[in-house]
Image 1 (cartoon, helix red, strand yellow):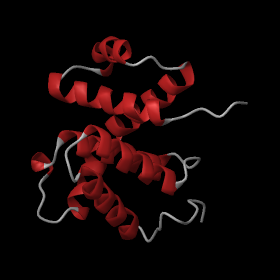
Image 2: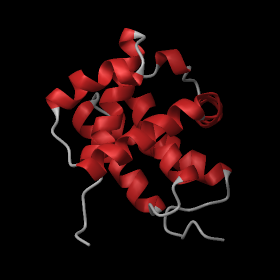
Image 3: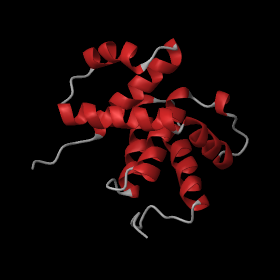
Image 4: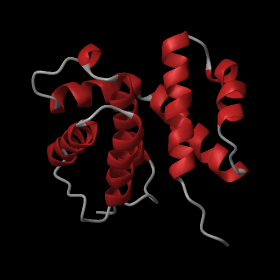
Length: 145
């Protein structure tokens, strides 16, 4: 089976969640517009939708984790893209065991660097490092314990 890149799926999930947040529409309502802007393979779309669903399902828990790991930053003061990228990485870290922790963090940092503000990559990396540390985990270890 050929290896596929999940980066487009993560970007797709970020775009979906951002569109949903700024328009107050559902995933089904924003999906056509997001798909127009980024062609995806079926397995990338499926993975991206899985990320969107997990973020929606665990949003309150994710918000609490971000609050606990951000010093002097309220959620509403954070760049939306940063927060959304962090949500995606956190669901990969917490709910998708086949994605290595280092990959989830590296992808989040690189996506933030490309799509958000200057310094977002360091901010995202810091929040995710704190998230792992609060759970007694390291990005260099395996998720299976």
